[in-house]
Image 1 (tube, one colour):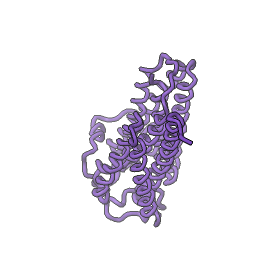
Image 2 (cartoon, rainbow, N blue to C red):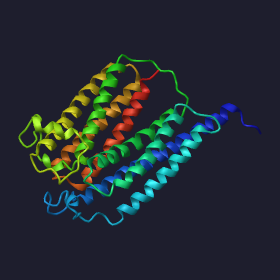
Image 3 (cartoon, rainbow, N blue to C red):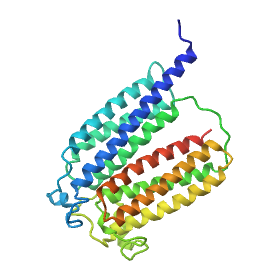
Image 4 (cartoon, rainbow, N blue to C red):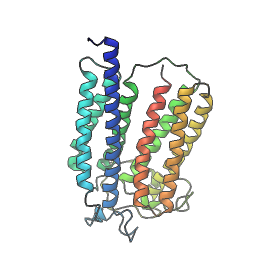
Length: 313
């Protein structure tokens, strides 16, 4: 019996969506294993912290989990294969837009990160660390975008929070980028207090230079280091502002169920991510809490993608 075009299209989109969700799960695992490898190698969670934190920069790395490198290679390879298959399925026999566009961006990002990996053996290059951190989060975001755009779009009522929502998502993205800079510069030890940062409430004039990622690190930040303090404070303030903006957006979209649910999911994940961040600092930078904070950032960006999709016409 011949399959009608509508049924065939429905089966195709379901398979693409399932593959995209599988790729997203693999991408989350890549983020988790990569964070474990990077942070354990940097000495996070070691017995004599903070003395051993960043010892990898001095050529004496704290011994990471023995299977971390192998696990990272296996999961990353599986994610790349899934990404190739996903792009193929989205483009053939005819393009399924906009999912095909996001699948192409996902595959391009995977190949780009593979090239950047050539320089990843030197942790002193902050820009490489930053690209790997943000790139891993991008894998989760793009694969999830394929999943949520693989089915035909449905018309939905628009609320009045669209423009403000974009501002909130921009602030959310800035929060994640600032967090990435903290990790890329090994700046965690710069701030060990809450809610202030080593007695400071605003970055000093010298601290703003920390926003420049193209430096070669000489060692990890010490408590109170101006650049690290600036990054921590800006990261916290950006997160607080993003939470306020998302709360306002949730109120404005109260009459649009799908968009309201999406913004509430993003807001909930942001609050949980903030709690993880505070627990990480309060624990003296526990390795597993820090890894969870990295994974939470990836899930938060995926929720942001869902929110952006829900407010589009």
